[in-house]
Length: 184
Image (cartoon, rainbow, N blue to C red; front, side, top):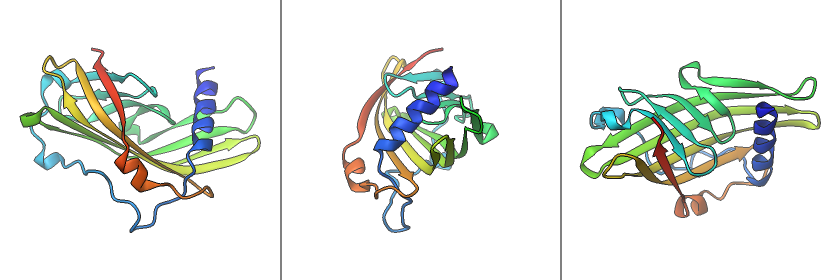
C-alpha cells in the first residue's frame, strides 16, 4: 500500500512540474557541497532529521555522510545502494530511481548546513506509459542554537522528459522554506 501511495504521489507531482533536461548553459546549481572545505561534522547533527513538509528525511552519519533518506519522489533510499526499485500495483508497472551525489557540508561559524540530493535518473512504468526524468534538490540553512531544528531554503529542480522547460530562474529566486527537526 505504501508503495502504491508513493508511486501515486510521485506521478501527481511529476505531472505538475513541467520539465525537460537542462542544457549545459541553462542550469547553475545554487551551491556546491565541498566536503574538503567542510568543518568537522558535529555530533549533535548525527541521526535522523525530518522535514515539516513533503516527506523529506535525512540520516546523517558521524563522518557527515548521508546514509539514508526519504526522497520526495523515490521514497526510502539507502544512499550507499545508489538507488531503489518499487514494484507497481498493476502487472508490469514499476519505478526505478538512480541516485547521484547525496552530500552534506557543515560550517560551524554560522551553524550552517547545506545538503545536495541528486536523483540522476528515474523511470516510472505505468499502465498508460512511461515517465522519465531527474531532479536536483538543494537545502541550505541554519541549525538552531539548541541543535534541534534546521530551517532551510529548499530549491527543487525537476526535469521530465518531453515536458515544458523548467523555469530555473524562478525556482532559484523563490526557494521554499522547510524546517527539519532532529528525531533521534
